[in-house]
Image (cartoon, rainbow, N blue to C red; front, side, top):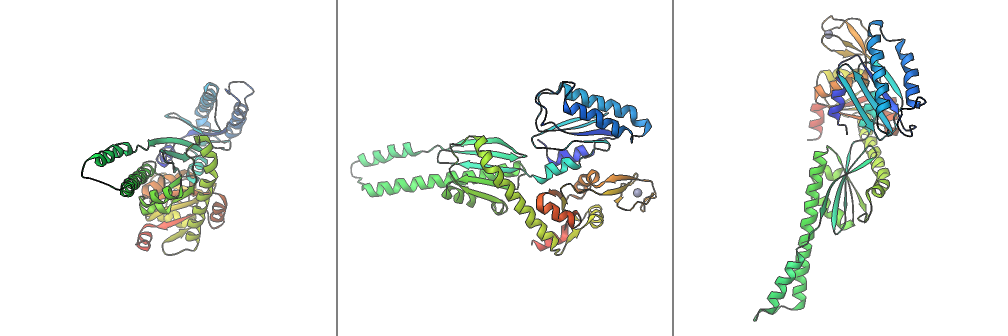
Length: 386
Ligand SMILES: [Zn+2]
């Protein structure tokens, strides 16, 4: 699976290289047949792209097209989507479980669509608990991956032996009621320890998987107690489902919780966007302002509308990026080249130390209408949040 760090590394691969996004959902098995829809599209699209490839780069272009073709022919049965970066020192293939659209690009790594797929869906940690066990999962890009299973082991059998021993000791007489109270008390304490431990494990998994979300399913009492053991940031981003999913297989759990996780993410994007559009202190809106503040290293976080891109120009020497089409750089006087926003954004965000998030659906469309990109400045954001 891919992290935002990997996206950054891909965006920095040496160019020119060939980027291919393939919808492979129509491939029934090995795409080695000459009639394979993917291979047919690849050949046709290569001919279209080749018309715009500089003459001196054509031999490498066709070499990479051929490499991608043989990768396809030799690959195992394919999943929903396949992304290939193919160049002299790059041969990255990413298999996705989510639908993607066919695209082919020559030049810099074209990570726009990849960024949308990754950025829209942050991973969620899922904890399914019942009286006998707890199962942790990671939900991301339509996949529910098991992380850990913890079986609840009660020390109850040892207490019974001790309690019986006490009863049989001459001189010590306990009423049945107080025995039962002591037993209940210990059982209660044991459950509390178990729930606290699960809260700590859930926190550790969320931190390890870089997941801001926790989805917790269990009885009302269990979810309440576990949530008490969560740090406040995680508790704010937790969703609870009071239901016993204990006997369910992962595939059934996934079917049940996927729509809930997706709508929770959409709500969160909506809130963030409303916050941004209301434009309190430290908010930045639009391509020009965001590019300027990012390069001044003042941005704390950046929101990008899914599918939004913009034509920019980048200095070949100092790397300064702006929308103006001046042939020379205002900072150093060197030549500038065209660059898509999606190509340069992951690198700029990483240099600035800003969190980059891509938002989709209705919130994404609202952001696109309002300028496509925006975010918050670091200092003001910190001050506003104490
Ligand atoms: Zn420059």
